[in-house]
Length: 185
Image (cartoon, rainbow, N blue to C red):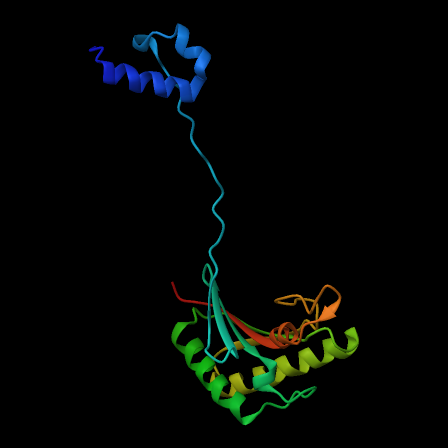
């Protein structure tokens, strides 16, 4: 093995980094052996989310599961469960997406509210809204099995209040209906 000054400098630097400066004084570069450790870090699921320009619709995918979220403000009038004409148009596009990309199985429709009103009121409203969306999608996708559930305010996307003060923009994001289905591989 050659003992060129460059090689000795590299070995000395490596030994200093691995074992500390004291080890360099007694180490013979011919005998220098450093352990190599595997670095293991957990890999988290990457959840990509795409949002429409008007912020009324977003889509995320985690593994094979696709979630299409529509804000309630575009689907319903305030405190109502009757779909708007604009909602019909958006739901037609969601039905086309499910038709093209669903792997089959259950399509879950989840209603969500903000933190205004009582839990009982929000639970009932979120369920009625999920059922309204289910009814429209079922007319367009007769071969699909749907499940409608209402979560009220229990699953906010973002905090309804910050430092004890309501944040209107956050409350609007939390008022939504999510359509969840498994995508083809």
